[in-house]
Amino acid sequence: MSETVRSRFTKAMAGQLPEDTLPCLEWAGWWDQTITRWRGEGLPAELEIYDIKRHFGLDVNYQIWFGQFTQAPPGLPGGGYIRTEADYDRVRPLLYPDPVPFDRALWEGYAAEQERGEVICWISLSGFFWWPRTLLGIAPHLLAFYDEPALMHRINEDQLDYMKRCVAAFCEVCVPDFMTFGEDMSYNHGPMIGKPQFDEFMAPYYREIIPVLRAHDILCLIDSDGQIEPLIPWFEEVGLQGILPLERMAGVDVNRIRRNHPQWRMIGGYDKTVMHLGEARLRQEFERLMPAVKAGYFIPSCDHQTPPGVSLQDYWLYVRLLKEYMQEACR
Image (cartoon, rainbow, N blue to C red; front, side, top):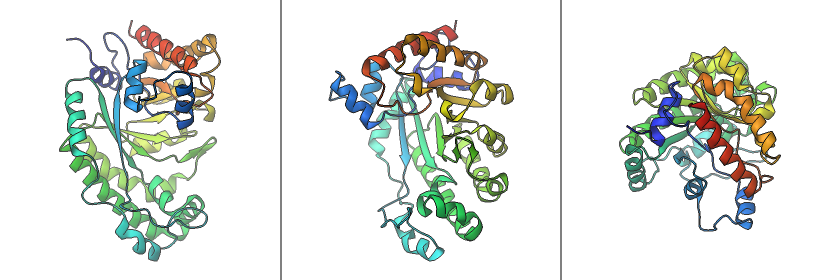
């Protein structure tokens, strides 16, 4: 049986090499400014995100991010929407929509493509660091670990219940191949919180939602920017299986991760800051990644959204080399 987009992804994430090529993915879309530049350089104006992926000959991966707002409340100075439990009571009626908001007919069509192996489907949920930060704002959120612990738990309990509803409703239509928890809980020098805060305010909720996802055979990944390597043991303890996007600018080293965590799944890792520097530099970056690629459980892709400094010609070169190296890995 010949390989498909879906079978290649499944094998790669199981540590196996497909018969012909590893997946050629852009896990995210592109910055608006990047697309605007490319349209000025000849990208057809009528193409939207999935058609753009097909235009470049990339694998198509349909995604939905489940939002929590039925209506966004007024924002507060300094960011966020709430500061206290009373504020949360006030905005709570605007959160956690019921029924879960997604286009059932659209995803039935996507599920048919997935069943034929033509595409990958994935979902994203706001994680137990990301969602409280959205509600509270960046600085108030970090203080809330100490000043508002009951509120933090209440938010994540509600988010856990909402996640369960999202997974149950969506899986009636389409069982995703993988999912990501949006967290973004590291800067360039490491995590924004310590292990005690993770263990108290995040781990219990991950330990409850991950078995729900794994029961559907959904691969569970974290989406976090920054230097995430110190966090990997924390995530492994609660049952998570991998991470994206592995930002090189933050010092992330996929080969070091592979040595320390042999079966940790990875997507991304390709340094976006070299994509405009010509073929020799692009090849050098692919060569840097190849030991981890050949060790398995790793699909190289841009380590964040392609920046607008990358021309359309630059990107065509990147895609050509991506296909070359992904085929070479399977030889």
